[in-house]
Length: 415
Ligand SMILES: [Mg+2]
Image (cartoon, rainbow, N blue to C red; front, side, top):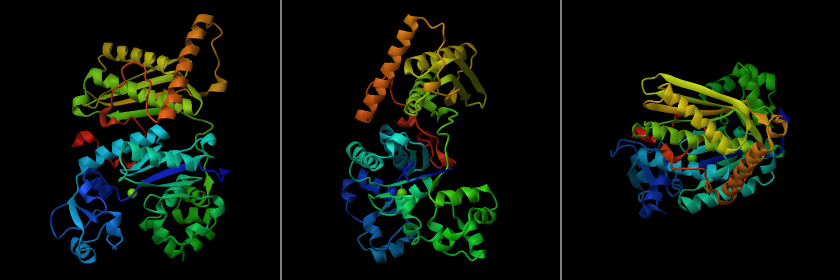
């Protein structure tokens, strides 16, 4: 555990996402109070309200009748989940081009981990994300960004100045800036923990703050309590920063993507993404594994082990070898889920080079490595994959990114 005042976590929460999405898609709704409803009936409640409607006290959960009383000009629109999911994939791709998305927390919330050398310029990075979203998606869909030593505080910070906020929480700001929150405003305090705290006489953040770590563990009933205490107090639990295990990506393929050629195309995209993330953290891999799950539920898996590699060319060649094997072993049929994983990770300064590598092979390897570094630099500069090896194309959902937590986001193919 590290005492950290720096911004290891950047959390993005889109403002009134469904309502803003409707305003984004339909310019005539912009600047007007909008309420998103699940069905056209007076007996329903809002599932989202635009910031213009929120000014009248209308919010998620407000019944339609009450919303009309509070805000007679409100325009109701029926939710279009397929549109929101498509937009979700677009915004994730934009963010991911600025800084890799670590976790997708919900349809409109993502968290990113900043590397040590990115933390001093964290606010600049946040502004770049906002600028790129405005440039590539449009000015209507705004987000609020929180910067903090860990994800819990960054998520809290993102809520503090909506809409279009940018709030940085330092350990030195604690607990002062948390004291106005309700206990249940804090992520990790749901109804169950709130009730347990209540039984212990803890009813506000000041009292929560005064508890010791063992005390919170006793209330939570496990080490999750210690973690919560540490995050709340602004500590940064060491992630696998120093001991990284693997870099992987997976994707569920829609029905029209379940051909061998498209499965291969998708795996290439996933691999290139994983390679970029791995290089960003200054690692190389010694193993590449491929897992193909068919729609019948059976699975084909294989792993390629060899000398450490950090360039896309070598990685894609190894993937090609694995796919050849998959074809020979009839592993590649109607593939429903593709998973590529870089494993046997080593920090680049610890790579043991093969003593038998001859001068030509070495020059060749170093050329491909320089090309990959150049590709990354261009991507960083233009916030988009400018230079790719071979056919790049698009992936299903157009985003080959981080894991989706809680499985709350339906795949586009489900619509
Ligand atoms: Mg939101």
